[in-house]
Image (cartoon, rainbow, N blue to C red; front, side, top):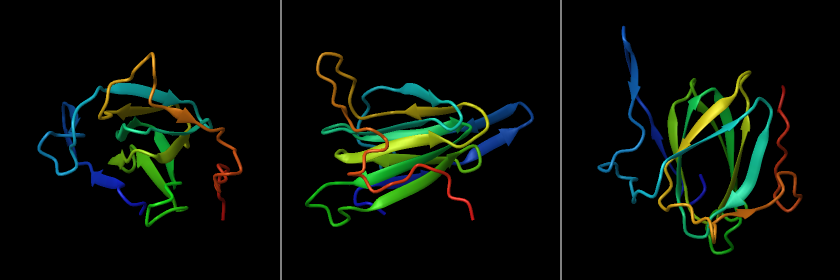
Length: 151
């Protein structure tokens, strides 16, 4: 796993009324600080990526559908420099994924319906000076192919 990446297996508590799933708690070992909470979505087959943050750390949970979330470690001083990680997250695998700053990340909706992602980053979004640095999802400098891998 890429250095600094953390995961938390999420527990779903169902009953006859519905279900409850805690995502991130202030007393979790991986909790750092609260910035904001937002929802982002992707339609089936859509890739959103690549981007990274210089300061912000993301805490992502897919709450509807399924996503393939992919990380790439381009940090020259990292012991996992050049490593790729794939996480298949969502209704069939409830997981919180913590993505360190300076690690490229992107995601692809792999379910037949729109997938919903909740992100609780450590910093608020700065509209005048966003901490977000984007690269085309098919840029050859990142050694990853977003196509489905059959076999």
